Structure formats: structure tokens, C-alpha cells
Length: 499
Image (tube, rainbow, N blue to C red; front, side, top):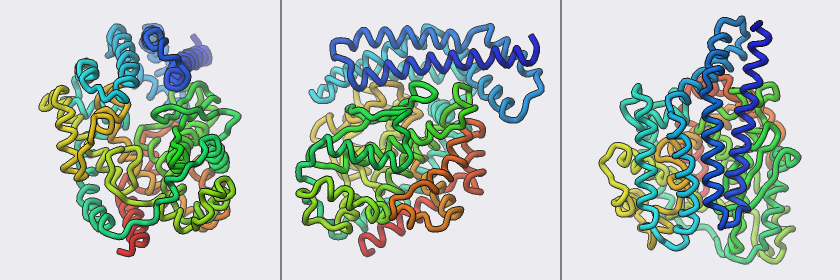
């Protein structure tokens, strides 16, 4: 084959892998939104079949030969990176037997379907054997990569290339040392007014407002849509089909708002990847931590800022005139930044959120290391929450059953990305502010274009062209550091609570 023919063949194979991945994402999106409950078993089989088909194509011997042939080509830096990422993905995929991939996918579907029923019923016993199977599969998966002696090292590297569990441990230790006294100080201060958030806010209006703000941020609804689900997520179904989901409570409009803005942040990243990278190995977010940085940036650093509410409070008051007729902009700003220890990770404020993540990460380390049995996990959960947050869940609904992750995928490699995202969100935002003086004034006017443009250029467009560490260095001028994040939290909450 000529150089041109080899490259065309590779691009065609990458397109096929992307399409198979998109079909799988469509099945998952439907399962989480509109699938009738009676269709769960069939959907698990379908997803298992498709996972097996995609794995077979991802590990095809002919594809491996194409990658070998391409190694001799004269490639530019972007194409060379495409080939390097494809080679890394191929080598990782070929270590996983096809039967293992199919069995894992089917189990994930069955476990998720059971969790949807078990959580509202507080039926932890039903999930124990399923989670034991999940743990077995997770340990098996890590064992296929003997270069990682610690299973958590494998999972961390799989989601954030180049990072180790030891690095995560160090970041978590620094955060815990800095945040625990700050949380204690804030928790002892007088709480802001919250009563108006408990009034009834019609859900259709909540959803419309979230979509309006998402569009202002830059989310393109021509290439996406929003739907309701139990646990919000963003998913890419195709090169130009990036969807978000949200949830809503009648008595708290901020739940839907910030769920939407969080997922919009993920979607802006995916929609911002350069067109010429789509449907290639570089055509998506570079890592879990960098991806989460964008959801947290748009949700918190922008959406919970004083400038945001200066620009958007009028919109909300016009939409809910009766509910907000006695509420000021300042009261709304303070209410959405209340700090209180809580049981639910996804509802947690900025200061306590990382303690929820650290709890899960440490429990995962114990499960993967063999020092904690699944049968003892619920009790260990309660003990960890009492130690880290001073709280005990009244039931498993708000305890070990609350997160979907362990019941729809594997154990390990997911939760630490949330805190890494928090750290990077402040680092990226500080760099954007340095390059664009006056961003707060833009946001107060409801103008988000300069911020979105900077992020698109420096974070979104490269896709996976650079490693996570390289991307952070190029965008901010330094390696990952928690300093901007801690400075942001200290400055914001010291002022808010008069410390």
C-alpha cells in the first residue's frame, strides 16, 4: 500500500470504531432516559454484543498491521500523535480478551438495571452479589496489565494518562489539610437565607432556564439536546451529536440549573474539539480530570460567581416572579454558595465536595487491595462518612447506593477525576483571566464568548493531541498545582462568610 492508501485505510477504521462507539453511547443514553423498564434485560444483551463487536474491530489483526505499516510513514506532528494514541489504545485493547469485554458489558447492564430498582427500595442486599462480581471483574481487568503492580495505578493511568495513585494520594492529602479547617470555620458562621429555595418552581420553566443559560455559555443545541435522567451525564453519540441530561426537583430550582451547567461544561469541551480531529483517536477529551475541570469551571467558577448572578438574576426573577418576589440578587448569590455538610456528593458545596470524593477513592483502594469485602462496604461507608463529614446516612439510599458508578461500570479510576477536575478548573480559569482582563465584567453582562473562546483554543480544540500534563503546561504555563484552587476557595468563602 502507498502512504496515502495506508492513511486512508486507517482513517476509515477509526471512523468505524467511532461509529460503533456512538451506537453504544446511543444505547446507553436511551437506557438512562426513555427505555421501558421491561427492556432492560434485552438492552444488556445488545450492549454486550456491541461491545464485543467493537472490541473485535479494535483488536483486529489487520488493523494492527496497518498501525505497523503507518509507523514507517513520514507524518506531521498531529498525525504522528494520532498514530501514537491509536497504538496505545490498540495495545491496551488487545490485552483484554473479547469474552471478558462482552461479559463485563453484559454484567454492567444487568447491574445498572438492578440498581435502578434497588436504590429507591433501599435494597443493598440485592446489590452485594452484583457488586462482588463487579469487583472481581475490576481486579481481573487490572491484572491484564502486569506493569501496574497496584490495581489503582492502572485505573488512574487509564483515565488520566501518566498519573499515578501516589500522585492522587498527595493531592488529596494537601486538599484535606487545607480544607478541613476552612470547612470547620465556615460551618460555624451564620448560614445565609435559604427559605425561598424550598418554594415550588415549575419544572418545565427550570429546564427552559437551564437551556437558555447553556446556550449563552455556547452549547450548540443544533448539535445536541437535553433530557431528564436519574443521574445526569453528557455523552457523544456522533461527531456532531453531543447530548446532555439533567434532573429537577420541584422545590429546588438550583438542582436542575447546576446539573445542566455541569453537563454543558462537558459538552462544550466535546463540541469544541477541532473538526479535523473528529472520528480519529484524538477526537475527544484528553482525560477524566481535564474533562471534569470544564464541568466544574462552568458550573462553579462561572455559575456560582457574583458576576454570574449580577447578569442572570433578572432572568430568573422574571421566570419565577412569585417565588422570588422578596429575594435579592445578593441573597440568591449567597444561597447557591451555602456551605453545609451533607450526605449526597452531587449536591455538595465546593468546600465539602472533595471530602465525598476522597471517601469513595479510599474505599475503592481498600476494595481493590483486598482489605475490604463488598459485604462490609455499607458499614465502612457509614464509618468513613462519620470520620470525614461527621454524618451518618439514615439508609443505604443516601449511603452506599447513591452513586451509579460502581453499579454501571467498574471499581476504580473514576472518582479521583472529580477532584483533579476541581483543581484544574481553577488553574485554567486563572490562566484565562490572565489572558483576558475583565472576564468578570463580561460575565456580569451575560457575555461568555471570550472565556469560551480561550478555552476552546487552549483546552478543547487540541482533543487528545497532547497528554494531560502537556495540555496543562501549554495552557497555563505550569504543571498541575492546587495553589490556584485553594486560593480561589479561601478568597471566595472568607469574603462570603466574613472570616
